Image (tube, rainbow, N blue to C red; front, side, top):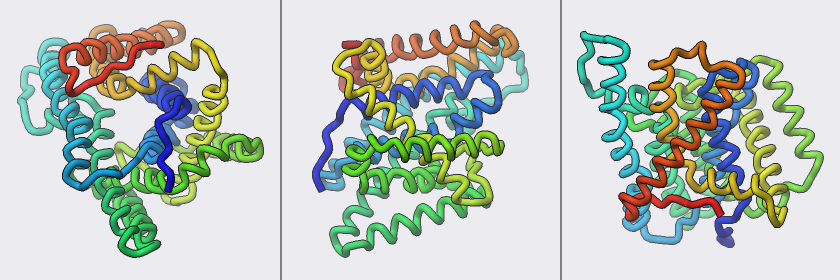
Length: 323
């Protein structure tokens, strides 16, 4: 299988996706929130699968991915746990607050960061599946089906394994087929019928009141109703990003590329800042244009933090400037 190099449209898709992640955490109308939650996290697993290239040995692969996913997780824990504790004790006045192991989980200090350890586990599983595939053709595909189906069954039973393994199994369901089909995905986005079909699925899902959430294992009773909207919404973003990438110039294209390449910083920073803002000023203040302004401020503040971390820790973080 040929390796597809990192190209602009995947970064544009990540830029669109990360803007939707931040928007989904604001007080937007329920119908719009439901639409975003149907596909925004599957989209990031799909994009990770499109960029997956297991060309090194197991040891080097694990070290590299641990450096880029687990070490940032630890660093953001160090940065934001004290902020969250201060917020609880000082701003919310919880005098009976006690520090516990729960404070080291993203559910306490930075909810979206569950994605980092989950993606690390997905990458390890995908690497092993590729090794199995080399040993016996189609055996990797069978293993993928078994793992993804097991993740769905555990999610339905709300069986949350440590280290976000259940979420990782759900993510693997989107990651591995994207890796296997990436050449077809890269070249097959010009079909207008697929876009119309994806739009129809999304309209049907949204007006049907569907909502999924990988973080809390909310997947619904029917696996098709969980998978189809996730694929449809992701496909629409991929088609839009491919169309934008085909344009030679454009400020919006460059901005979205920059946001996509710095999406980890936005993932990590916007939530603690949002929680702090709501504690200081309340949720009800941020409606209408104030909510849009908050959306922009959260993204810009996250980029500023990313720029600072890139300067202070260049061996761990890389900040991509606007070009």
